[in-house]
Length: 165
Ligand code: FES
Image (spheres, rainbow, N blue to C red):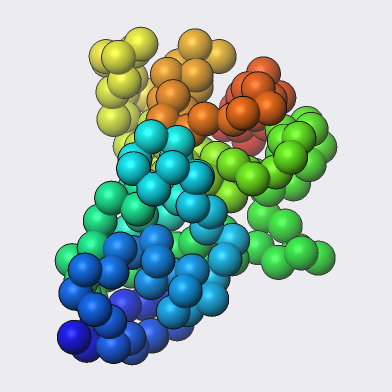
């Protein structure tokens, strides 16, 4: 089936098996391999991308469900020689070790900061309505869908916090 999506600001047209996940479409068909496949079952967050500005596990959704949507992957945030603020903060704060989960962490944090700025509550702070005001516990809760096998969590939170405040 034919699917059209805007990926990192570019109109893309794909001819896909309707059973293709968004993750596989991005990695295998569009060759955007910055988005990682960890568990392929919605458990690790390595495959996180933004769909119309909202974070999503791309392994859990079919590409066919995103006809007409706007997708942002890690490749859409910055370039190797021109990192965006959050990417630079991960480098500055040693927010990774092996790096495999990093694209998903950064995409999830990007979506999370958008959600927090819009006052979307979390379990920790049910009445966060005054824009970004994220405690360490708040960041930990909001980022709990993204696993890091190297356990770089304190440095990941520090990187996010440095951008959020
Ligand atoms: Fe999608 Fe793990 S690969 S959540």
